[in-house]
Structure formats: C-alpha cells, structure tokens
Image (cartoon, rainbow, N blue to C red; front, side, top):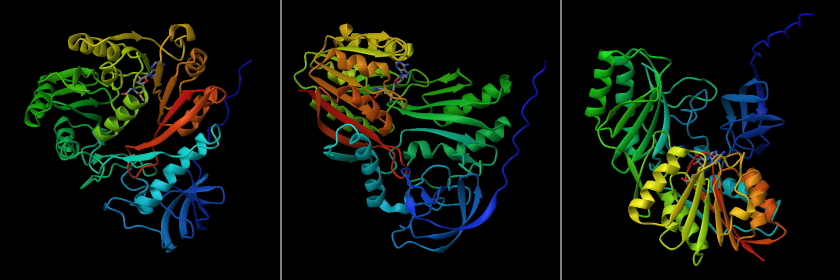
Length: 413
Ligand SMILES: C[S@@+](CC[C@H](N)C(=O)[O-])C[C@H]1O[C@@H](n2cnc3c(N)ncnc32)[C@H](O)[C@@H]1O
C-alpha cells in the first residue's frame, strides 16, 4: 500500500503584535513571554512582526534607559541589522555581563564554586576570518530574518584588510554575472579567498577575470568551488614563531589577539609538563608553542591540518607526533594518553566520549577550551569527581555577538 505524503507545511503567517519585553535571553535577545525578540531590551514596548516564536521589531514606543548608541549605521536595520552583530544596543558592560553569566551559569552546574579569573576581549576591527554573501548588488552578511544581503559601508568587527575586499567582491560578482559565498582568511602573507558559486561554468574569460582580481587585490590564494585559480604565495600562519602552511578551509581562531590569549592560558597551565596531548589540534595553534618545552602528541580529524602541522614541526625540529583521527568515532583511549597534561578544543558539539577517556587517563592537568558553554559543562562532568577547577577564563573574540570561548583549567586532586 502506498503511504500518503504528509501535507506540506504552509508558510506561517506573520502578525503584528504589541509586546513588552520582560527579560534578556542567553543570546542577548529580548524575551516577551515565550517569544524571542532580537534587538529589544527589558522594559521596552515594541510592535513586532511575529512569526512562530520570533518577533522582528517594527516600531519601538518605549525605550530602555540601558539602550546604548550602536557603533554602526547598519545595526538594527529591519530584518536583523546587517546579519552580523546582535549586541551593539547592550553597550560593552552589559554585553560582557551577559557573556560572563552564560559561561559561569553553565560551568557552575558542574563546579558550583566556579569564579571567573579573567576576561580577554579582542579589539574592534580584528576579526581575521569571515564568510560573506556576495550578490551583484551587495557584499556583506546575510540578514537572519530578511535573508537580504546588506551592502556594508562600515564594520566594527572585520579587520580592515577583510573589509577592504567587500566592494571589489561586489564588482567581481558583476563581472562574473553571478553571486557567490566568499570565505576570507588573513594569513601571515596575505588573504586566502575561497569562493563558492552555484555551479558557475568556468571558461577562459572567467578564469582571466578571477586571475586579474587576485592580482589587483594582491591575494595570496584564490579558489573557486574548491579548485585553486591563483596561488601567488602559498598562504601560511605562525604559531609560536613556527610557520605552518594553511590548507584551504582550515580552522583558525577568529582573531590574532584571541589566539594569543588562548595560547598564554595553555602554556601557563601546562608549564612543567614533559608530555602533552593536544586533541582537536587543528594546525597546531597550541601544539607548536607547547612543543618548545614538551613532547606533544596532536590529533585532529582533518588530515590536511595534521599533515601541515607535522611538516611544520619537523622543519622546526620540534617534538610533535600527529595523528589524523576522528576523535568522535575513535577517541584516543586512556591507555594511549600516558601524558602529564591534555588540552582539548573540540567543535561546538563538545568532546563527546573523548572527554571520558581523558578523565580515565587521569593526567595531572587538563585544559578544556570551548566555544559552547553547555557542551563545555557536559565535558567537564567527567572530571567533577577527581579534579578541581583551578581557573576559568573567558576569551571573547566575537565582540557584539553572543559567541564566547571558555577556558577551564583542571588539576587532579
Ligand atoms: C575549535 S577547532 C580547534 C582547533 C585548534 N585547537 C585551534 O585552536 O586552532 C576544532 C577542531 O576540531 C577538529 N575536528 C572536528 N571534528 C573532529 C573529529 N570528529 N575528530 C577530531 N577532530 C575534529 C576540526 O578539524 C578543528 O581543527
């Protein structure tokens, strides 16, 4: 018997409603009853276009005295500003308070006495990685609600070298006759730019346009749909003074200042350790500086990253052993972790079973770096019975957005 298909869900209708914002959600969004209302503050009265559980502010009739003057003209435009910052209306101190609360509330579910030992904030205009949406009309971020790309005229977040790419990218879209996604990373020797189109057919004229673009803007590398179009210099980054080649699409901490703050925490916590494991190591952000004073084993699922790290360490004569390994499917077992210290820095999903294996291995020091407070807390549970939380630090590389990075240092009792 043939099964009937369920009826297609109709687009839910938006309705205009008057709302009073009663609280601030964990991402800094206003809350009115069960509704999420971005860009609104407690005490404010708004008329919002409500779809499902989300309201987009159309008018504000009462304004909170806590509302700060935004830094940027795009902030708060209908449809969610430019699609980037969401917290400029909070002001620096309220935004920091919100972030501190998010980290502390999560970590205290495991270590109730946790206190924040420090907050490191990256300066404005220091973001060195970004994904842009580019159309023939505009280059910038895509709005959350409006799905529109707002042409960015200024930006408090992007490094000036990335911001400078935007106008020319729009010109490139015009020349190619199509929009694209652009992922830009500032390497030590220039910009690495990867474009993704919806199957643009590339002939000699498109290739010439792209090569001329790379030349004119002095790009280190330009790739289109995964294939290199121009490599004028092989992009590299440096960790602890050691150059590492940058494979396309590699992970890199969002700001240089944030990276340095994280490295300082790692080096201080692991001081005196003779053998250290760096799990979810990426290109060796921590492994290479650590290898100045310890033997390091590094593992990450990205073979291109572990290969680049291995080559960099060999050239620099540093004791780093690497393994390309999926640590979710095949976590390093406790018996493979005969080390004095473990650093782990997983993706947003957390370390999963790998955290349990680290706890079983009982190294003297464990350092958890995480961009997701809830998952950090889940990972920390494995250590609650046998470790003390000796330091908790917030590294904020994402000014005016709710994202945070937490560093937790654990010492075995
Ligand atoms: C937040 S990044 C940290 C990288 C590095 N520690 C750094 O600071 O640059 C997370 C890393 O986890 C790696 N990763 C993602 N899934 C993984 C998996 N299943 N097993 C191992 N590594 C994984 C990514 O390739 C990425 O390098």
